Length: 371
Image 1: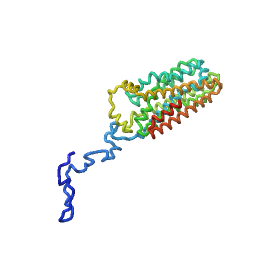
Image 2: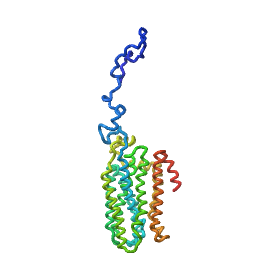
Image 3: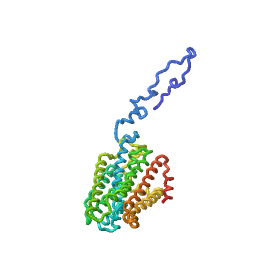
Image 4: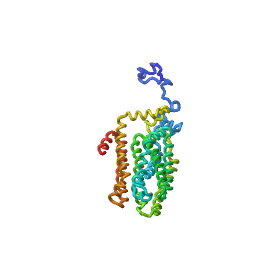
């Protein structure tokens, strides 16, 4: 906007020697007038625009606002992750009982746990690509549907000779796990503000740990160590029906509650990601760039050692305890529960700490020393 070169208009006011008063004010040029809110709508001139944008939807990139639905989304996801994690460890926590029921070796029951890790390795990158391609809602629906399907398939394995059916159900749940475990950081960044991302991510991971804790605690209570296979099948069916019903309910909730993204971006970083998103970006190139980053590689190694030790201990805990203390299935589950609760507390505290201080690197040092 150019300002007219009008010396009289821009000169300082002088007192008239005759009257001692300021001369009459001249009309202000139109170009110098304050723009009206109707002529030039801006967010500063019209605060109502922030609350009631003219073009609703994720395209309103100038509006930074967190959605009230974000807590419902993270809660439903966390419960879905809980259900899936429970199904991972429900066999391992009462391994000796399932060995007796199906008449198989301890190694065969161990594979019901290890299949989760086996499917995760080859499917991780393809599912991450699907998450980038199709978005959160599609991946959440797929993971929840597979989790529900696997739970109901297991109900067809309530005879001692149907061990392959329970393996099939567990493999389906393990594929669902790949879809579920890749979502926490994405949900946190898409739905939560900049000062809530770490806390939201820790809550999402908290659901997975809670499922493992329940998987250690509940199966030894629901399925007692008895020799009568008919009564044992009845107790196993109760556990399978409960988890099938919960998985179905959660699938329905995902359909109703889970949305692709909020109406407005929750942070400036997310607003920029909407604006700068390029459909031509190469997913393979982004993976290559990640593995060229030394800090990322060190983080992968550190987390891999931590997670590997935890999963190995969880899988073999029942066998280690029963070997030395026969008949102590319930106490073996309590030991596993104690381990997981300690991890859950650490995850939540670390998430809150990182949101407040942003000291990501400093928090890695004690973790490496502990390992």
